[in-house]
Length: 254
Image (cartoon, rainbow, N blue to C red; front, side, top):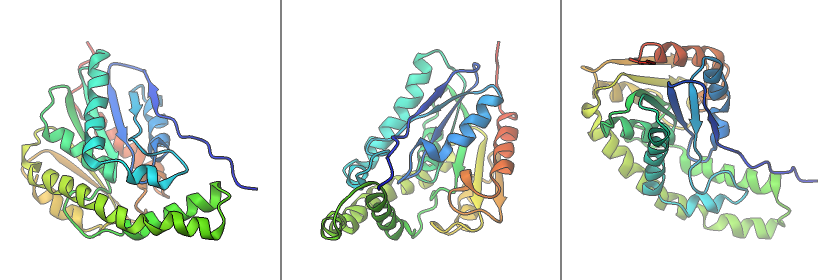
């Protein structure tokens, strides 16, 4: 019997005037950052974890049908949503792809964004293992949650590599734009990198921080964690470090 698919849900938990947005990864969902969100709730931060179009379904082609520009517009819309609700102090973070969009938001100089950062994100343009990883992900989802025959599954997976390549080209354009404009960021930045990252070269973060070396930034390195650092073996330390960074931001709760 196949497992029942439980559709991931965004979190929007209002706790205080201090708001944090957490963006998920390329083939992920708000579940990527759910445990961090719950930790921040406990620390009395308002937390929002939006879900990008195409994600959180049993059809991998839903992700591939979306556009990277569309996801960035959704990232901006997440900020607008909180601003419209009266939040004028917001921190933005993201895992992997989500971290790239968080950094792009920091570059926009949106007055309400007072800091943020990226977790294991390909900010410096690099070769990644995303094509192989996405094919594995698509195969796993179809195996786990559908009753497709081997032939049906093969047909479903046949076009995945080409679609991933096309979509990655668009993502890499965003990565290059993000990298090129890092010097525009004036808010404090948190960079998180896992040494055992199987998706991107872990050392690429050192090139990224060179582009912001005159800015206020923090780099936290996790020697025993993989790409999804938010659920890795050093998760509790990671969560404490995110909280510690947030405590350094210029919140005004009056």
